[in-house]
Image (cartoon, rainbow, N blue to C red; front, top):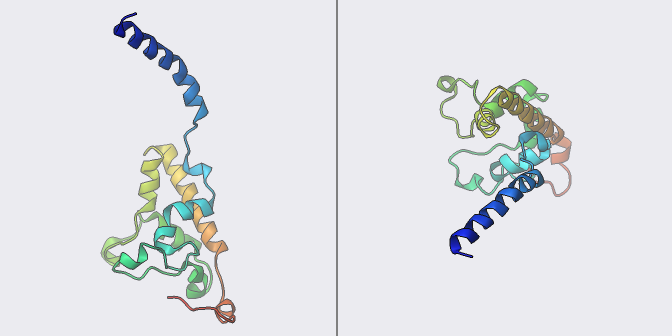
Length: 153
């Protein structure tokens, strides 16, 4: 058998296996992640694994990364709409707020999901999961005063 014939047989065999391989590896979408998993994947590098603003990237930034466990304390309650808008980033008036250090996650998620109408819904859903995860991390002033507790930014 010639090299050419062997090459065609190998290609034909691979072509027959391709559909089986495709079924074995389903694409992962944002919908497959919990809020906590989304946080770890997209936010923890800057905000830290405990969301206290101490992620490994935070030291290299020119701005202080906020402690996300204290949002409710800073605002007198958890401002769901505001937090959603900040994460999404597309509706923030840059003229009023200056430059934005944080990625525009609404756009990033939309692109990652395919940049179509379905991707817009997936982006919103992912941001909602992140907002709910951040709500679950909120702690009060009494937790800061616990023995051995360290106050963060």
